[in-house]
Image (tube, rainbow, N blue to C red; front, side, top):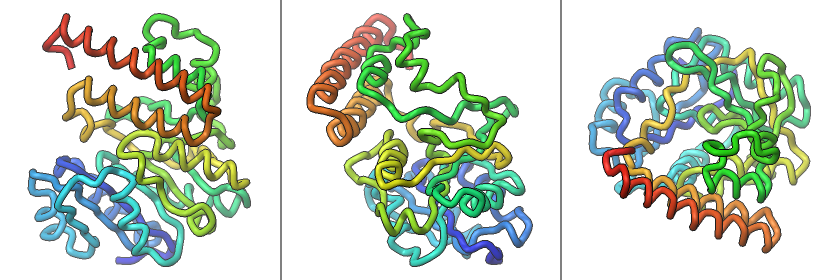
Length: 290
Protein backbone atom coordinates (compact mmCIF):
# COMPACT_ATOMS: atom_id res chain seq x y z
CA UNK A 1 0.00 0.00 0.00
CA UNK A 2 1.55 3.35 -1.01
CA UNK A 3 2.39 5.76 1.76
CA UNK A 4 1.30 9.37 2.12
CA UNK A 5 4.90 10.61 1.92
CA UNK A 6 6.15 11.19 -1.63
CA UNK A 7 9.37 9.21 -1.72
CA UNK A 8 10.83 6.04 -3.17
CA UNK A 9 13.26 3.49 -1.74
CA UNK A 10 16.05 1.94 -3.81
CA UNK A 11 17.86 -1.20 -2.65
CA UNK A 12 20.83 -2.66 -4.52
CA UNK A 13 21.56 -6.25 -3.57
CA UNK A 14 23.98 -9.10 -4.23
CA UNK A 15 23.67 -12.56 -2.66
CA UNK A 16 22.05 -11.55 0.63
CA UNK A 17 18.57 -12.94 0.07
CA UNK A 18 17.63 -13.52 3.71
CA UNK A 19 18.81 -10.11 4.83
CA UNK A 20 16.99 -8.45 1.95
CA UNK A 21 13.81 -10.28 2.92
CA UNK A 22 14.11 -8.93 6.47
CA UNK A 23 14.70 -5.44 5.08
CA UNK A 24 11.64 -5.50 2.83
CA UNK A 25 9.47 -6.92 5.60
CA UNK A 26 10.55 -4.09 7.89
CA UNK A 27 9.50 -1.54 5.27
CA UNK A 28 6.07 -3.05 4.69
CA UNK A 29 5.47 -3.44 8.44
CA UNK A 30 5.61 0.32 8.81
CA UNK A 31 2.36 2.21 9.37
CA UNK A 32 0.70 3.02 6.06
CA UNK A 33 1.55 6.71 6.19
CA UNK A 34 5.27 5.97 6.61
CA UNK A 35 5.63 3.62 3.67
CA UNK A 36 7.31 4.69 0.44
CA UNK A 37 5.37 5.38 -2.71
CA UNK A 38 7.51 2.82 -4.53
CA UNK A 39 10.25 0.33 -3.67
CA UNK A 40 12.88 -0.72 -6.20
CA UNK A 41 15.21 -3.69 -5.80
CA UNK A 42 18.11 -3.88 -8.26
CA UNK A 43 19.83 -7.26 -8.11
CA UNK A 44 23.43 -7.47 -9.31
CA UNK A 45 23.34 -11.04 -10.68
CA UNK A 46 22.83 -12.87 -7.38
CA UNK A 47 23.08 -16.66 -7.42
CA UNK A 48 21.10 -17.28 -4.21
CA UNK A 49 17.55 -16.94 -5.52
CA UNK A 50 17.13 -13.30 -4.57
CA UNK A 51 15.14 -12.29 -7.64
CA UNK A 52 12.72 -15.20 -7.31
CA UNK A 53 12.18 -14.42 -3.62
CA UNK A 54 11.39 -10.76 -4.33
CA UNK A 55 9.03 -11.49 -7.20
CA UNK A 56 7.17 -14.22 -5.31
CA UNK A 57 6.97 -12.67 -1.85
CA UNK A 58 6.92 -8.94 -2.71
CA UNK A 59 5.15 -8.68 -6.08
CA UNK A 60 4.47 -4.95 -5.52
CA UNK A 61 8.23 -4.27 -5.44
CA UNK A 62 9.75 -3.22 -8.76
CA UNK A 63 12.58 -5.72 -9.24
CA UNK A 64 15.37 -5.20 -11.78
CA UNK A 65 17.49 -8.31 -12.43
CA UNK A 66 20.92 -7.55 -13.87
CA UNK A 67 22.72 -10.24 -15.83
CA UNK A 68 26.03 -9.07 -14.38
CA UNK A 69 27.25 -7.23 -11.30
CA UNK A 70 27.14 -3.62 -12.43
CA UNK A 71 28.36 -2.18 -9.14
CA UNK A 72 26.57 -0.15 -6.50
CA UNK A 73 26.43 3.24 -8.24
CA UNK A 74 25.32 1.98 -11.66
CA UNK A 75 22.66 -0.27 -10.14
CA UNK A 76 21.24 2.59 -8.06
CA UNK A 77 21.17 4.79 -11.14
CA UNK A 78 19.09 2.19 -12.97
CA UNK A 79 16.35 2.69 -10.40
CA UNK A 80 16.82 6.45 -10.11
CA UNK A 81 16.16 6.76 -13.84
CA UNK A 82 12.71 5.26 -13.25
CA UNK A 83 11.71 7.68 -10.48
CA UNK A 84 10.39 10.90 -12.05
CA UNK A 85 9.52 12.78 -8.85
CA UNK A 86 9.75 12.74 -5.07
CA UNK A 87 12.61 12.27 -2.66
CA UNK A 88 14.66 9.05 -2.65
CA UNK A 89 16.13 6.89 0.09
CA UNK A 90 19.02 4.63 -0.93
CA UNK A 91 18.96 1.66 1.42
CA UNK A 92 21.32 -1.26 1.90
CA UNK A 93 19.74 -4.74 1.85
CA UNK A 94 21.25 -5.59 5.25
CA UNK A 95 19.15 -3.00 7.08
CA UNK A 96 15.96 -3.02 9.13
CA UNK A 97 13.96 0.20 9.15
CA UNK A 98 12.50 1.29 12.50
CA UNK A 99 9.11 3.02 12.70
CA UNK A 100 9.43 6.75 12.17
CA UNK A 101 12.82 6.57 10.46
CA UNK A 102 11.67 7.59 7.00
CA UNK A 103 9.41 10.31 8.37
CA UNK A 104 12.20 11.84 10.44
CA UNK A 105 14.66 11.75 7.54
CA UNK A 106 12.30 13.38 5.07
CA UNK A 107 11.06 15.96 7.60
CA UNK A 108 14.66 17.14 7.84
CA UNK A 109 14.33 18.53 4.33
CA UNK A 110 11.56 20.81 5.61
CA UNK A 111 13.40 21.81 8.80
CA UNK A 112 16.65 22.59 6.96
CA UNK A 113 16.04 24.34 3.63
CA UNK A 114 19.55 23.62 2.27
CA UNK A 115 19.65 20.00 3.43
CA UNK A 116 20.13 17.87 0.34
CA UNK A 117 21.16 14.63 2.07
CA UNK A 118 20.06 13.13 5.38
CA UNK A 119 21.27 10.07 7.24
CA UNK A 120 19.89 8.29 10.33
CA UNK A 121 21.37 6.76 13.44
CA UNK A 122 22.67 3.31 12.47
CA UNK A 123 22.70 0.60 15.11
CA UNK A 124 24.12 -2.92 15.16
CA UNK A 125 21.78 -5.92 15.51
CA UNK A 126 22.53 -5.95 19.26
CA UNK A 127 21.41 -2.33 19.56
CA UNK A 128 24.86 -0.78 19.96
CA UNK A 129 25.70 2.33 17.99
CA UNK A 130 27.49 2.33 14.64
CA UNK A 131 29.47 5.47 14.05
CA UNK A 132 28.05 6.50 10.69
CA UNK A 133 29.22 10.10 10.22
CA UNK A 134 32.55 11.49 9.07
CA UNK A 135 34.02 14.69 7.80
CA UNK A 136 34.86 14.86 4.13
CA UNK A 137 38.30 13.33 3.54
CA UNK A 138 41.53 15.21 2.98
CA UNK A 139 44.55 13.77 1.15
CA UNK A 140 46.34 13.27 4.47
CA UNK A 141 43.37 11.41 5.93
CA UNK A 142 43.16 9.00 2.99
CA UNK A 143 46.91 8.39 3.13
CA UNK A 144 46.49 7.52 6.81
CA UNK A 145 43.67 5.09 6.03
CA UNK A 146 45.63 3.46 3.21
CA UNK A 147 48.63 2.94 5.49
CA UNK A 148 46.45 1.33 8.18
CA UNK A 149 47.40 4.04 10.66
CA UNK A 150 44.26 3.39 12.69
CA UNK A 151 46.08 0.26 13.93
CA UNK A 152 49.43 1.82 14.83
CA UNK A 153 48.74 5.57 15.22
CA UNK A 154 45.01 5.97 15.93
CA UNK A 155 45.51 9.44 17.41
CA UNK A 156 47.00 10.85 14.19
CA UNK A 157 45.27 14.27 13.97
CA UNK A 158 44.11 14.11 10.34
CA UNK A 159 42.75 10.61 10.84
CA UNK A 160 40.91 11.55 14.03
CA UNK A 161 39.40 14.61 12.36
CA UNK A 162 38.25 12.57 9.36
CA UNK A 163 36.64 9.86 11.50
CA UNK A 164 34.75 12.56 13.46
CA UNK A 165 34.79 10.65 16.73
CA UNK A 166 34.44 13.96 18.54
CA UNK A 167 30.99 14.64 17.11
CA UNK A 168 28.03 14.26 19.49
CA UNK A 169 25.85 11.60 17.87
CA UNK A 170 22.80 12.55 19.92
CA UNK A 171 22.57 15.97 18.26
CA UNK A 172 20.86 16.72 14.93
CA UNK A 173 23.50 18.54 12.97
CA UNK A 174 25.17 19.35 9.69
CA UNK A 175 28.03 16.94 8.91
CA UNK A 176 30.50 16.21 6.13
CA UNK A 177 29.12 12.84 5.11
CA UNK A 178 26.76 10.10 6.26
CA UNK A 179 27.07 6.40 5.58
CA UNK A 180 25.38 5.17 2.43
CA UNK A 181 23.56 2.33 4.23
CA UNK A 182 20.56 4.66 4.59
CA UNK A 183 20.93 7.76 2.48
CA UNK A 184 18.02 10.13 1.88
CA UNK A 185 18.31 12.50 -1.09
CA UNK A 186 16.17 15.57 -1.70
CA UNK A 187 14.59 15.62 -5.15
CA UNK A 188 15.95 19.11 -5.89
CA UNK A 189 19.47 17.85 -5.25
CA UNK A 190 19.01 14.93 -7.64
CA UNK A 191 17.71 17.32 -10.28
CA UNK A 192 20.64 19.69 -9.73
CA UNK A 193 23.64 17.44 -9.10
CA UNK A 194 22.48 14.32 -10.92
CA UNK A 195 22.90 10.67 -10.02
CA UNK A 196 25.80 8.67 -8.57
CA UNK A 197 29.16 8.51 -10.33
CA UNK A 198 29.28 5.07 -11.95
CA UNK A 199 33.07 5.19 -11.99
CA UNK A 200 32.84 4.06 -8.36
CA UNK A 201 31.94 0.35 -8.22
CA UNK A 202 32.06 0.17 -4.43
CA UNK A 203 33.11 2.60 -1.71
CA UNK A 204 33.19 6.40 -1.92
CA UNK A 205 29.97 6.68 -3.96
CA UNK A 206 28.19 8.44 -1.10
CA UNK A 207 31.31 10.40 -0.12
CA UNK A 208 31.60 11.71 -3.65
CA UNK A 209 27.90 12.58 -3.67
CA UNK A 210 28.16 14.49 -0.38
CA UNK A 211 31.14 16.38 -1.77
CA UNK A 212 29.35 17.20 -5.03
CA UNK A 213 26.34 18.36 -3.02
CA UNK A 214 28.51 20.59 -0.85
CA UNK A 215 30.21 22.07 -3.90
CA UNK A 216 26.75 22.93 -5.26
CA UNK A 217 25.75 24.69 -2.02
CA UNK A 218 23.75 21.86 -0.40
CA UNK A 219 24.18 20.39 3.08
CA UNK A 220 24.37 16.90 4.57
CA UNK A 221 22.54 16.37 7.86
CA UNK A 222 22.70 13.67 10.52
CA UNK A 223 19.25 12.92 12.01
CA UNK A 224 19.66 10.91 15.25
CA UNK A 225 15.90 10.60 15.82
CA UNK A 226 15.71 8.34 12.73
CA UNK A 227 16.94 4.83 13.48
CA UNK A 228 17.94 1.98 11.16
CA UNK A 229 19.54 -1.33 12.13
CA UNK A 230 22.50 -2.16 9.87
CA UNK A 231 24.22 -5.54 9.83
CA UNK A 232 27.07 -4.14 7.76
CA UNK A 233 29.31 -5.26 4.91
CA UNK A 234 27.61 -8.56 4.13
CA UNK A 235 27.98 -8.50 0.34
CA UNK A 236 31.54 -7.26 0.40
CA UNK A 237 32.50 -9.69 3.17
CA UNK A 238 32.31 -12.40 0.53
CA UNK A 239 35.47 -11.09 -1.13
CA UNK A 240 39.07 -11.69 0.08
CA UNK A 241 40.88 -8.87 1.82
CA UNK A 242 43.37 -8.21 -1.00
CA UNK A 243 40.42 -7.64 -3.35
CA UNK A 244 38.86 -5.33 -0.76
CA UNK A 245 42.05 -3.30 -0.47
CA UNK A 246 42.37 -3.05 -4.24
CA UNK A 247 38.78 -1.89 -4.58
CA UNK A 248 39.19 0.66 -1.79
CA UNK A 249 42.37 1.94 -3.47
CA UNK A 250 40.66 2.29 -6.86
CA UNK A 251 37.75 4.20 -5.35
CA UNK A 252 39.94 6.39 -3.13
CA UNK A 253 42.09 7.24 -6.13
CA UNK A 254 39.07 8.17 -8.23
CA UNK A 255 37.77 10.42 -5.45
CA UNK A 256 41.21 11.98 -5.04
CA UNK A 257 41.60 12.62 -8.76
CA UNK A 258 38.21 14.34 -8.86
CA UNK A 259 38.50 16.46 -5.72
CA UNK A 260 42.17 16.89 -4.74
CA UNK A 261 45.15 18.56 -6.35
CA UNK A 262 47.47 16.46 -8.51
CA UNK A 263 49.97 16.29 -5.65
CA UNK A 264 47.30 15.14 -3.21
CA UNK A 265 46.01 12.47 -5.59
CA UNK A 266 49.57 11.22 -6.18
CA UNK A 267 50.15 10.83 -2.44
CA UNK A 268 46.94 8.82 -2.11
CA UNK A 269 47.96 6.66 -5.08
CA UNK A 270 51.36 5.82 -3.63
CA UNK A 271 49.95 5.16 -0.16
CA UNK A 272 47.33 2.88 -1.66
CA UNK A 273 49.93 0.84 -3.51
CA UNK A 274 51.91 0.47 -0.30
CA UNK A 275 48.73 -0.44 1.60
CA UNK A 276 47.97 -3.25 -0.85
CA UNK A 277 51.49 -4.52 -0.28
CA UNK A 278 50.90 -4.55 3.46
CA UNK A 279 47.76 -6.66 3.00
CA UNK A 280 49.56 -9.09 0.66
CA UNK A 281 52.32 -9.61 3.21
CA UNK A 282 49.79 -10.13 5.99
CA UNK A 283 47.89 -12.66 3.88
CA UNK A 284 51.14 -14.52 3.17
CA UNK A 285 52.07 -14.68 6.84
CA UNK A 286 48.49 -15.47 7.96
CA UNK A 287 46.90 -17.27 4.98
CA UNK A 288 43.70 -18.12 6.88
CA UNK A 289 43.00 -14.55 7.88
CA UNK A 290 40.19 -12.70 6.13
